[in-house]
Image 1 (cartoon, rainbow, N blue to C red):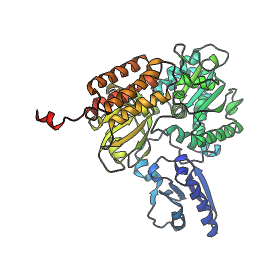
Image 2: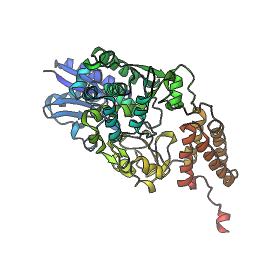
Image 3: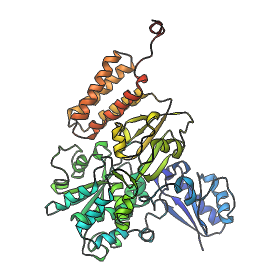
Image 4: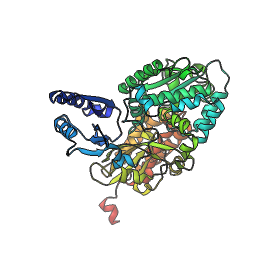
Length: 518
């Protein structure tokens, strides 16, 4: 029987040599005359241990990491003899960082071959679709609504309400659109699931199509994600060949097909109406609302637009029931959230857990503090438009309403950590500059306000009329927050105002010796 070795093909692992390591294992096995089967999986999300290599044993898959090409020969010897090794981590499922997670969405990621439909089905795939095909539209909508699932792209809008609106709309055609334009700093969950478990996204979109009466779906992926594009295209072909896309899905009378569309990388195309403009072949510019995409979306037809993680949660909800999902979480934040830990952090990666874990637990305990070993000064949650939280707010539970109550947002679940060397004036300036560069230009508060914001913060950094310019920045933020057409301009004030509020000392110059004496 061949030895089975599992090596990730996830972009994060490939970036640190996973492809070369796979080749080295093949060569070492050939030299030793031992047959091996190398399975290229997704990542389990322990980014600081990538590339993490696993081998099948009678007691489970034993992991090693982080592996370099120079380690392959000695690791192969350890694998064949079941002997000790400095990089041996033990049975992967028993690694504490994985064991303490609640993996509902990412249960298969890093475990299965993402190109194998048979592997997906062997690990519970398409059970959700099978149940959905046995229910009518109203029953599926009831399940999705009762689960408490909210949009995982950042807005947190109840998924069941969005689907119900499209289901009730009258039209000759309807569409399903998956927003995979993951552009927030410190976020990579969409990419990981597309590269590591693409059939899950396909299954979720298919269930959505059956529910609302749509027969066509599009997944819009940013061009910076070539591995995800390749993985999704391969999975779509396999699903179509296996009878899970196209006509008579799963032997039923239902029809649904989908395709990948690649965006040019504009951050604003993560906003749903800009995304629709891009999908229709135009420049990605925000549409005024109403009408909502649920009524007048892609090509003017009723359209469900959800994030990758929203669709990826659907198969579990249908397979296991709404209650099984809703039993996790707190308040109005039900289920689990794949949280991404990045920046200056010792143990960066993806950690899926139920809502309710505190920010401090995530950064200090799960993340292990800073990579540099210096004290944590600030964390930004929710991407480049998220607020900066100081240590004083580390008791905040990871929950939509809890973060909103403290002028923050969860967004896509990304957490970027900064140590005490960070200059918060530069971070505030970056937020305004980012908005100025990425603005679609349609509305004045975003287009002009962000440019004036950069100029004003630069004056503060030079010490020019600091008090007056701080007041001007706050005024600009209020104008952008309440006057912008979309969340790009509307949320840019979050990082700026939070930096001003919690780290005021970085903006106000210290008194001179003469002033102090007076």
